[in-house]
Amino acid sequence: MLDTFWAVIAEQLQELRTAKTADDVLRTLATDHGPDRGFFAGSGGDETVSDALHTAGWQLVWAESSLYYTMRAPDGSMITYIEGDILRGDRHGNNPAPTAD
Figure 1 (cartoon, rainbow, N blue to C red):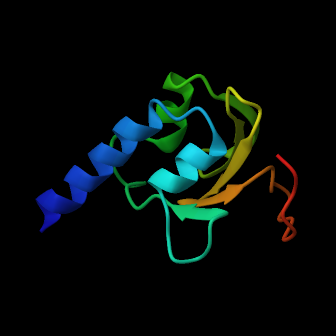
Figure 2 (cartoon, rainbow, N blue to C red):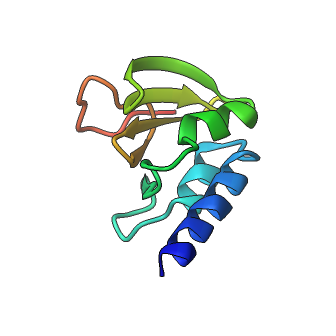
């Protein structure tokens, strides 16, 4: 069972390495909580979402730590990462309202 979990995480990271939009990230890390939210369960592993997205050409926009940051995609769309949760747009500062990409 553990092998299957890490195989899924490896597949997600591989997809993130080619993600060019926030939609790509959210599709890869989809949850039941709506189209503007995702979750990365592999945060305890060796590789990170930010490293994978950096490989895909994303830029860091803002960071409080390695667990809370905002990144911009090559197309200009953004995601905010908060301890594994992925939110569409620049949501740093605990902004509960969705923002434009």
